[in-house]
Length: 143
Image: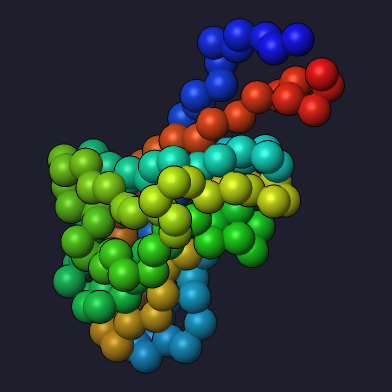
């Protein structure tokens, strides 16, 4: 028998500090834990970023991309440039990997990954919010 749940659509909210690096041409991805958990079985349907205040020296990101993940599972497309996503007082959306939604196969913390850039990132500073919309029914497998 099907149940009608009013809490299936959810939004995970996290705030992250942009991880700075002291050198240019960094080869690794820099990650920030957002302090929220996305459960196994969730279907991610949307991603949005919002920077309430200014991000210092955001131009040093150059073409570095930003992308959220749960554990090792990437949620968004990798073509969103961080300096375009983190604009003070603007809400910016990121396309999820598949238009219909991304099934989270292993639950875990929401992490924001910032790719390397060819600019000196030591002067970059600021925080931003991330909103991840997802569908989830905790008692789906109980029926």
